Length: 327
Image (cartoon, rainbow, N blue to C red; front, side):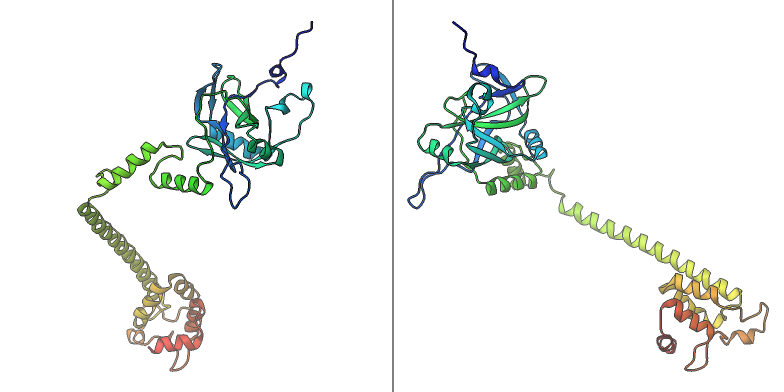
């Protein structure tokens, strides 16, 4: 008599099925309708676990989610891992599709698009549990890739029945709270409670005493003023040097020093460009009496050529420059 080949021997190399099982709890009927399976179902636990048959496995939900999203494929749900035994059972259709994965503190959750035959089987309680199929890493222990999942009748792990007790919105809120507390998304509830207790108790390591805060604010303000004063002094010295050199070079009369200094303080680059373009109008060692009158300044209501250059460099119209000069 020939020996019958066990179904499990036909699994692809590195694939493990039935290693963790979670109950699919049906939602109560609404408005007279039939019960519906949950949209989100737990597929694996988190961390290291031991199956009922003694096998050891390690699940890293975040890593499994990353690989799933990189692959960009929806994963099939079948009955009793039937799609893994094509050689002996033939092709089998999907009974649903895993369309999204989420890493939560409890483990890996899948968002399921249930098809009609899976919904009917769950309503009839022909199947009560869902079990993942995963490819293992070289250590034959760590789950590296989720291949799909199956509705099954027999648990492999002594795990409590798990349904989608939290909506996706609640999960997002929980993650946001943990982040606000400075904790990782996978932090246990005890860590969150402890962090909140420390905040309520006014843990001195989490707060700066008011006196210290006030002293720091005063010191910072003084330091900022000191830096600003230094910047202002350096800018004034730069402007003074520019105007003094222009006077020495005979481009500006000493009587116009304050006017050009004010222009340089408001627009150094524009003033420098205008001065550089000015002709020499005073000879070195000239008559001091001449210096009392600014030869670069036009008559009333008019601009000299030097003033026109200055207005152009400052982006002013001649009328605006005249008005500023008059003021």
